[in-house]
Amino acid sequence: MKLDATDLRYVTSDEFRVLTAVEMGSKNHEVVPSPLIAQISGLRNGGVNKMLGDLTKRNLVAKVQNSKYDGYRMTYGGLDYLALRALSKRDSMYSVGNQIGVGKESDIYIVADAEGNEMVLKLHRLGRISFRAIKNKRDYLGKRKSASWMYMSRLAAQKEWAFMKVLHEHNFPVPKPIDQARHCILMEFIDAYPLRQVSDVPSPGKLYSTLMDLIVRFARAGLIHGDFNEFNILIRRDTGEPVVIDFPQMVSTSHENAEWYFNRDVECIRRFFRRRFRYESALYPRFRTTLGETPDGEGFRLDVVVAASGFKQKDMKTLGEVSA
Ligand code: ADP
Ligand code: MG
Image 1 (cartoon, rainbow, N blue to C red):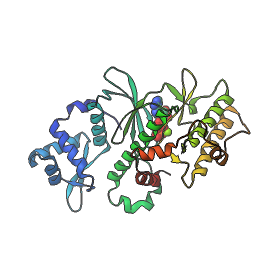
Image 2 (spheres, rainbow, N blue to C red):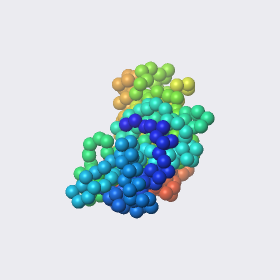
Image 3 (cartoon, protein in one colour):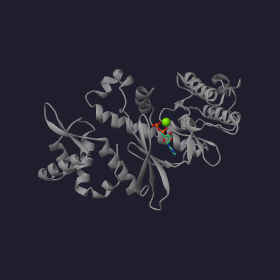
């Protein structure tokens, strides 16, 4: 989907009120009836209908004909708009540049602040791929599929933000988090290649042990990345040092399947080094011994810190149930 920053300047304040009203109405209506939109926005009915028409043309809301009543729902376009507007009102970002990544469940853009400093905007887009584990969650999703996916995308962004902040504060090699709004995260741009694209490194053994040490350091701080692979490890163009990204699926070492997640992260790296660099080592970290050792240096539990930061266990669970 295209992100259009020019739109930011061409939505009138009344249209903005109408869009916000649709968003608020979406909390308990999959299809928000027009009279409710008018009521929430506090604007005249006739005016609201015209604005809804304009917003529909620009794909910020979508008109839905229901069996019971007609109404509107938010689109990702509308949610993007509200998030971008919030970020630019706070002076966190000013302009949108090129899209640099389309993940399974996110879009990545280069953006800039008013001084032209480049940053990365990650927009979470859950629900783009298949329904996977969602079948069991029917009671949760009910008939409100799209609204719920937007809600889940927001949770994913909040979770990723909470982890990125804590990791950055504790000097883990992750991008510096800058701001967060709705389903979006704004972070430092890393001038790097994903490990996936790297065919040659000066010393595979050195990189291998740096990455394994990182898995161990995470675990000693109470965390498992959960998706520690060649797509989520960036290699800095200048120094060759790794930077880790992509945290919505992080789990605590107290998670019931922690050992399985830990081993999977370790195995991903071993397999990649075997295939790409023909490098194999008998040395690799084991979950039990890693946790059994007294935490030297990392005398803190970041999983506990994140839980205390406001990202609720309940939300973690809701997310876990779709993203496993
Ligand atoms: P997804 O959840 O879709 O996998 P990621 O966070 O892994 O999203 O980002 C997808 C891609 O975007 C990465 O593989 C990387 O190429 C690029 N990317 C993400 N964050 C940054 C960043 N801070 N700096 C530079 N490139 C980034
Ligand atoms: Mg990724």
